Length: 249
Ligand code: G
Ligand code: G
Ligand code: MN
Ligand code: NA
Image (cartoon, rainbow, N blue to C red; front, side):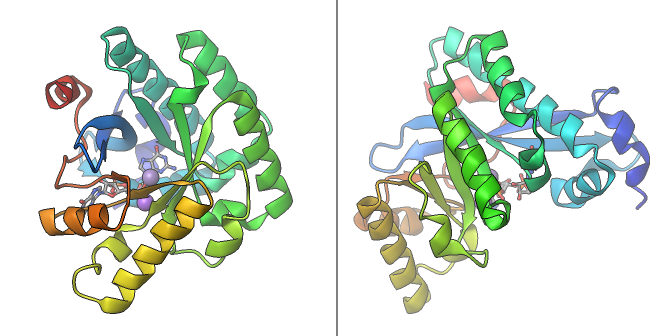
């Protein structure tokens, strides 16, 4: 599949769009936010997964344009919900390359101002790989924090530096990777590990979000073990923006 052909044009041809997956408070089931997830409907190939095209976008450098579009579109949509009385937060995935961009912070700031959205409603999700350049990443995280934006560590536990990543006072949220949630009911080790991450999060003042919850039993386990927030097909698949209000009310 030669998807590199067309990715450059995908933006201008409006082939990219965002779905929004709800995040819920596990104790009440209330939706308090969403995560924006990019989708590409290729005119000939149909839906192409971001796991396929994001790496290509990164190699070609087009990730910067795509990334700014995602930030703009997600903030725009979240503001529409706010204006409709749905005051939820919005999380955006950011790749390591965007993080290196010297204009990244300023563009986020300008986009928030443009749409008149309070920065506290925006969450930037970064993976542990972003944190490899410790000095740089700490500076960017501090600048995002000063702007009032929140920072989440995505796919927590799958990288090589999980613990040192948590040694940053400006990180607000830790998302436990789905691969761990998958094992909480079947693997004793995994269950202990997840419980420990939740307790560690509590003592370090992080919000912990469990990702990829698919069953009631998993949700129950997490609730009993004091995990506050969750996301997964059990609650909702990623939604078109028009479908979200029906879920919230
Ligand atoms: O939604 P889905 O499970 O198909 O996402 C697959 C992967 O693509 C996930 O790792 C997710 O973080 C990533 N992804 C989704 N949307 C974006 C985006 O806007 N930017 C970046 N960099 N990655 C994204
Ligand atoms: O890497 P990141 O965590 O940003 O990617 C989240 C991805 O996981 C999205 O592509 C989303 O579509 C997918 N996802 C979300 N919830 C579930 C779930 O319950 N089960 C499965 N299999 N995938 C999920
Ligand atoms: Mn994510
Ligand atoms: Na994740």
